[in-house]
Image 1: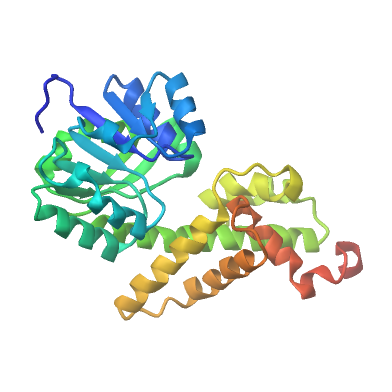
Image 2: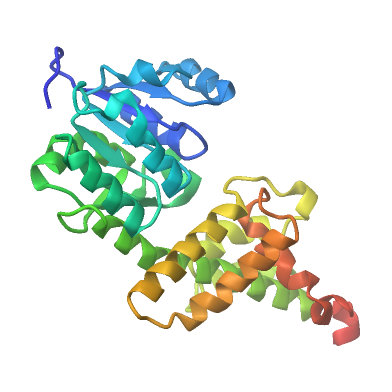
Length: 305
């Protein structure tokens, strides 16, 4: 990368719940950051943090590298029409931080390669808390020279995992992660709903099992929200994210000829949640789907005892 300044300028596209704390980590490390988001509210929050931010995509034209956080593969492909990625501008490396699937990133990288722009495939995991605290896991795949050139800003966000040298490899690692994460989230909800059905204090049950063989990161992180009344539960990660990700994992499994039976069952729970209008609810609300099943809701815990 080249820049008029000794410190490269990082462009950051997408500063929502995950993107903003990631951009902030890079900014607070002393790196120059310029951010863009279509949501004026998020732009205002970034500005309050001292990050140069706007709603205008053209404001990223001077960036040496572009970090991208989008929701879907279609949104990622849509960036191909931007003058920013024509190959004639300053941006020569794009870091895809989103989970959008192997095919989307492979196609995106192939088309940018024809324009002289390289892609680092870098989906992340660790949730909003991990983004805020800089303890994400980054599934990084790309040309080693490109990765090394951006290792400084990448490491401000968390632990860099070496996942290969070609775009799509990082997404494949993330598919394995999401099979686990989605399954752990759904089973955590079922376990706490089970504790309720047994007439147990859910808070005590959560504390008792979290540190043992049955514990998981999802149980410890989402469990406290699961036991809150739905109307008091804060929304940190929309449940629709896991609906999207389980669909991506199912597609990847089908492409590999792999029968992901447990994941398929978990995916049906997220589909049921979506049908119940929980898309924009916190993902810990998957517990409400289990509780609302007719066989689970027809009797009180005391009647079951």
